[in-house]
Amino acid sequence: MNTQQIQQTFLEELGLSDLPQEKQEALLVKMTEVVLKRIFVETMEKLSVSDQEAYAKMIEDQEEPEKIEAFLKEKIPDYENMVEKSVEDFKEEMKKQ
Image (cartoon, rainbow, N blue to C red; front, side):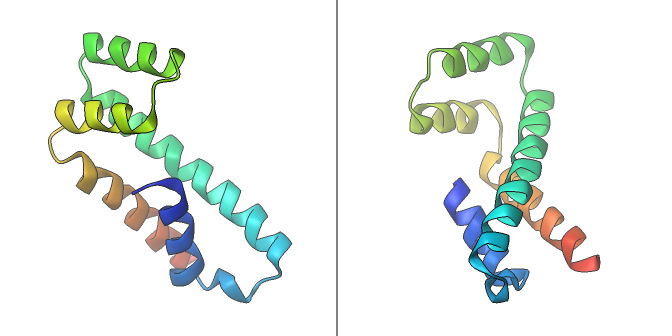
């Protein structure tokens, strides 16, 4: 699930599409940042120290997102489900507010 897919999910499932475009964009940016931070924290918790270092190097070297995602999928069992669960959990929290 990429950033664009996450934002589309928020638009559809949280009823943001009725808001003015400017408000939509501002909310989407903030929501996406929160979800990405959660995914990052969970990812780092699941990686070994050496894998964290390798991941940091990939980010530093500005590796292609596809390579980084492949690395994470290799190192973290069920990575895609972890990401989807983070997005779902966040949506549920937003629906309750």
